[in-house]
Image (cartoon, rainbow, N blue to C red; front, side, top):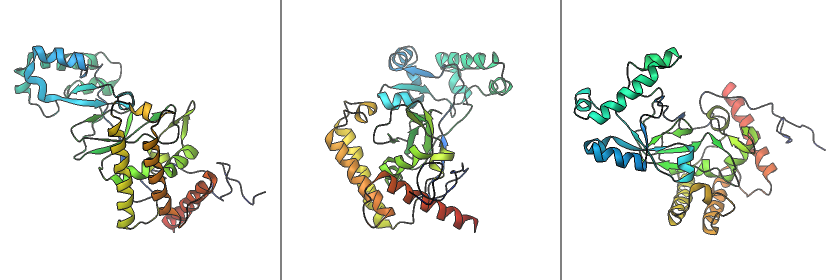
Length: 297
């Protein structure tokens, strides 16, 4: 018996959480990764890259690691020939690279979409470009079989993320800790769209609405330390893919590192650890309602 019941089937008196174009909390902006619209012309497997470089060895500096959701989860490498900053004069000295540019241009010209046809005028560029100036965080847009935690990645600034990944242009492990926590998963599971049994992670509904209280630098450092331990544990099992690490086969030491992080993040919200997911969700909804009210005041 409760006095209220909300659209998420808990007792907090709130209406449905509304999409937002910017974060409610003091979080860095989340965008999407790169969208080449290239017909696959710029993308290479390991073997394809190696064979290409046998013919055109001087092109090696222009290859960057490419991560979509599949590459991040499986650990299988793909590469992108990234030519945005390469002059036409330099490309003219690299005939195989020039062929790739012409292939992409021809693909775009065959499109029935006017924006794609227009993009043929700048064949070295992507349709959507996102090149963070620092190392950056990523979350897949779709996680098909989330168990206990969202798999959050930290990529190098030299890497390229595809538009199948959400991108946070920050390397601050405090934000990685927040996004990797059980508290954030509970929020995301409640408010997100679904993909089968998995989660469709939207920046507007999952990230920008996520309520985070004011915290001290000391609290942030504790979360950073716990997040770093998770990265170190992943590195200790570098022979296992992310999808394997975050399955029923999760190593005990990685699970313990996550449980330690969960406690540090939970104590940002409450002076004591909470017993149930419903308690935690109601706490989040109450904070969300308060922050929305303050924002509209």
